[in-house]
Amino acid sequence: MQKREYLAAIFSGIALIGSSIALFKAQPVIAQTQGSAAVFTSDGKLQIPKGFRRWVFVGAPLTPNGLNGGKANFPEFHNVYIQAQNVEAYMKTGQFPEGTVIVKELTRLLNPTFPDGSRNEPSGRGFFNGEFNGIDLTVKDSKRFAKTNGWGFFSFGHHPEPYEATSAEKPVSECAGCHMANVAKTDMTWVQFYPLLLGRTRSNGWDTPQSR
Image 1 (cartoon, helix red, strand yellow):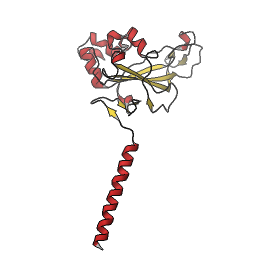
Image 2 (cartoon, rainbow, N blue to C red; image 1 turned 180 degrees about the vertical axis):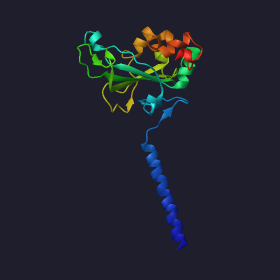
Image 3 (cartoon, rainbow, N blue to C red; image 1 turned 45 degrees about the vertical axis):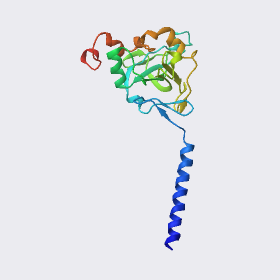
Image 4 (cartoon, one colour; image 1 turned 135 degrees about the vertical axis):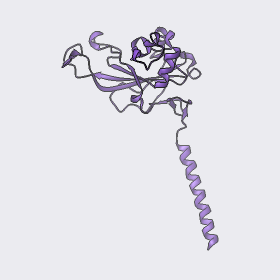
C-alpha cells in the first residue's frame, strides 16, 4: 500500500513538473534593462510601462489643427512623462541615463466650439485637455538603437483607449529622423518645450523653489 502511494506521489510530481515546463514555454520571454522601465518581448516589441502617469510631468506642447491649415501632424496635447530619477540625472548632466523612457500621451481637445478647436470656459477662451488619444514612447539604449543616436521610437496607436499592448520600433522616417535633424544636440529630446528640463541652465537642482 505504501509502495503504491509512493509511486503515485512520484508520478504526480512528474506531471506537475511537465505542466510547469509547458506553461513556461508558452509564455513570451521578457527582457528588461536593469533599472529601466522599458520591457521588451522576445520578438523585440516594447510594452507600455505601468504607472507612467505617476511619473514627473514635464510639459504638454500643442499644435492644433486650427493653427495648421486643418492638418496638423499631431493635433492633440502631448502630455510628456519621465521618471524622477532620470529627470534629476538630466538636470545634473544635460544627458539622460541609459534606459530612460519618455512617454508622450496624446489627449484630444475638449469638445471644440470654435473652428480653431478652442472653446469658452470660466477661465476664458482657450484649448483644454479632453480624452486620451494615443501613446508614443522613446527609449534610450545606445547598443540596441545605435543607428538612431541611441534612442528607439515606438507608438501604441493614435486612438482612444485601449491602446495596443506592444509596439515594434518605428521606421526612421516616422520619428527618429525628425529628432536627429532637429534635436540631436539635446539628447534627441525637445527640451525647449519643457520648462522643467530647460531650467537646468538656470538652476543646479530641479526640485528647488527656483526651478518650480
